[in-house]
Every structure is written in structure tokens, then in C-alpha cells.
Length: 277
Length: 171
Image (cartoon, rainbow over all chains, first blue to last red):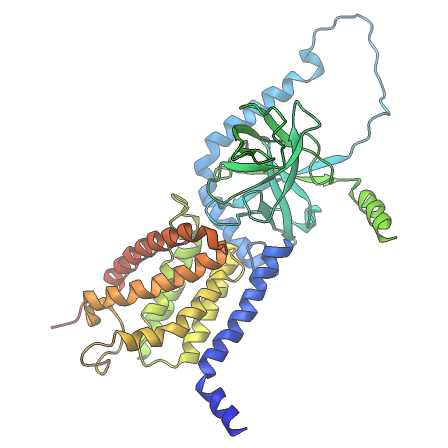
């Protein structure tokens, strides 16, 4: 007993050090593994508030680019309006279409913090549970996908972007519907991700567009992800090494849309019920 | 001593604000992550109670973590620094000890000693930080490169702060 007390006295500092490290690192690795932030982060009220204040100052520097992008998107949308079309037949009729039902709606939000240099990159947006944003929702921009919400407070949400170690997003080729794989970031360049799971019998061309598969209901089908930059086969392996250039620029990202899937609970209920039994 | 803590509180607020508002958003290269707030642990007196240091380190770490979405990485590295700082101070003890030294500044300790001391601490901090962040053996090259470049950047910032906020000794 005396020996034990002596031992504890001698290594007290080391023991305190190990104990603290275990506590702190358990927070860290829980966040890494389960996509669920439990440590303080920028979706908290106070840190979110200060981050937003900072963004209110800095955001003016990127207004010009943002305006240019909005103008372009506006022109695109204008071109799809009915008055942009020349009537080929004179008969006027309306169709009350009942074969379509809205599945996705989009909540616009501003990015108040972004990062591209860490191993797992997060962005913070200025909308939270008060605007019906919840954990697990997908996030996109006009150009492509961003990631998904991992934590939201009443006014702010934290988003894990595709620039992260543990994120796998199922994707497919735009013009070859059957060719499917998933993308993953290797941590080196924030403009490029790697496409895995494409076998070498498939003809992959430079410039092919990769879009989301939309099977899990987080992203709608066909949201652009990137463009194939390089496809090579190393040492006769069965899968190809494909490098994809992301269409989203995470450094200048400003406005995002949070995807709300109205069928999500239905799909989850069905799938869970099926696998439980 | 009282004077030191008043100055320290001001420096604490200033450095934390600089870290979370400016340096965290510094994204010129993915190899460089400057951390000026480490100055706060570097300048603590030699004779300070280690539990006070631990308290400062955890407070500082949680604060910086909350604003940079690192989920405990900063806190963990700072706790390590609290543990190794007395060991380092012992290892590079000057010839006449720390007897007439009340604060660790570049003016009190000399350029060479201060550089050696802060580079060792910065290197340990960054090595722990990036190893935990990347957490892969096959990326060891990247970890070392990130550690070295970030250490040098932070060292330069810390030296600048030393000359800005600490007066030279009166001869």
C-alpha cells in the first residue's frame, strides 16, 4: 500500500497528463468517427456570434464575384421561363400536372466560416434549427455539392464538407448512368477528390462529369460533383485511379443551399423497419 | 508580479482574438498554420505552480478549439506543452540558473536561449497537433513538413510580439 502511494506520488504529473489526454482525445475521436460534433465548435451561440461578426466585415471583399455568379444564375433561370420560348402551336392550354410531387426544397444560407487547409474541413452557416435545419441534411451550392450538416444550434449550423477523411459520397457518371462509385478526399489538394470503385473495363474519358447518385436521399439525383481530370490504371489493378476536379470552390464559397428531403422520414422508416426484422 | 498578471490578461485577450479572427483564416498554404497564442504559455514564469499553468492551458485550448472547429486538438497539444515545459526548462538551464529571472522574454534570456526554447516547444506542439489531426503513419512526410514550416512561421510571429510588447531591459 505504501509502495503504491509512493508510486502515485512520483508519477502524479504523468498520471494527470494521461488522464486529461484520454478525456480530450475521446472527444476528438468521437467527432472523427461518428460525424457528430460534441466538443465546443462554431455552431455554438457565442462562437457562432463572433464568427458571424467577423464575416460581416470580411464578406464585402467578395461581393463582386458573388454578384457575377448570381447574375449568371439569374440569366440561366430566365431562359427557362415561359416567355423565353417561341410558341410553335397557337393552341393555349395549361397542364395541371399531378405526376410530379415535390421531394426536395432548399433553404438558402450564408457561409460565415470556411476552411480548406485542415485534414477535415468544416464550414459554418448562419441558419440553424429555427429555420428547420437538422443534422444529416445535405448542403449544395449552385456549382455543386458541399457536404452535410453535423451539428446545428438554434441560429448556426456546422457542416462537414467533402474535404474530409471520413466522408464517402456515392456518385455516378452523368452520361453513363450505370457506372457508379464513391468519392473520397486524400487530403492534399482542396480542388481535387479521388473517385473509387470504378473497374478498369469502363471507358473513362477526361472531362466526364460526375454527379450525385441520390440514393440515400441526402442529395437530389444529378447534382454536379466534379469533372474527371485524370484516369489511370496502376499495376493492372482491378479499379482505376481517377482524379476529379471539384466544381465547388471551397475557398470562395459564400451562399449555400441546405437540402430538405420531404420523403426522408418515409424512406428511413421503410428501410429501418425492413432491416430490423 | 501583480503587474505581470495585468499585462498577461491583456495579452491573453489580444492573442486569442488575433488567433480566432485572423490567423485561423490564414490559408495561403496548407502547410502553414500559424498559432500566435502559444506565446501565452512560453512567457509564463519559471517558478509558476503547474496547476495554474494547466488551468490556463485548458482554458486557452477550449477557447481556441471552440472557434476553429478542431474538437480538442488545441487543448490536447497545450496539455502536452504544460507537461513538457518544466522538462525543457530543466534541460536547457542557463549557467547561473533561473534565480534572478522573473519573466521569460527575449530581452531577459538572450536571443539564442529564447529561440532555442521557443522552437523546441513550438515543434513539440505542432508535431502532436498534426500527428493527431492526420493520424496516419504513411503521411509522416506531410506531418513533418507541416510541423517544420508552421513552427518557423509561428516563431517569427512570436519574435515580433516579443519586440512589440516587452520593453528591453534598462542597463
